[in-house]
Amino acid sequence: MARRKQAPAQFRRQVAAHEAFPEPSCRSRAHMQRDQAGDRATRPMIMPRAADQLLLPASPVFIAASLVAAFALNLLPVGRAPAVPDLVSLVLVFWCVHQPQRVGIGVAFAFGLAMDVHQGALLGQHALAYTLLAFLATMVHRRLLWFTLPSQAVQILPLFVVAHLVSLVVRMIAGGMFPGWQFLLAPLFEAILWPVATWLLLAPQRRPPDPDENRPL
Image 1 (cartoon, helix red, strand yellow):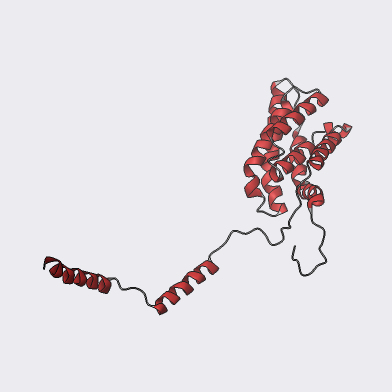
Image 2: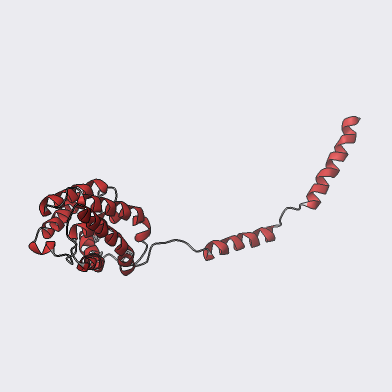
């Protein structure tokens, strides 16, 4: 008898709860689904630029050859002029931005020591500048690739300025002479050469045009 009395009471509670929180009808569910689909369609999505192109993997041989070629160009007699851009730093920053797993602080330190030996500078002067440059480039590489080439050149200009200032400070502490304010032109020229270096160093990775219209890639 007690169970029979409890059963109607439980049924009344379930009916009251159903009336307080009714289930959505089929029509309301359809409206909810359309609203959610519209929200997803209008929601801003972070997508790469449409002009971006799928690139082939970078060859380690080509990376090493480009760094050696930049170092060889720095060995020319004009490389001692204060306003001449440092091509090693330019190529280092490029590969630290595009291939941070292969080119990093260790590679920058090695080329910095080689540059110190060549120029007869205080051992560690260029190594410190290149190491700091590689570290800063690795920090900003994810954000930098979302911008156009002119915007990238503007954003990496402070990195080149910091590297040259560090090298100058170490040189002055060691008793070197001030090279003149022309040395401020070197980071400016390096930033100007950034689009050219990007076009040249990414050329081997670009896919050839596919004549098959049925395959978009």
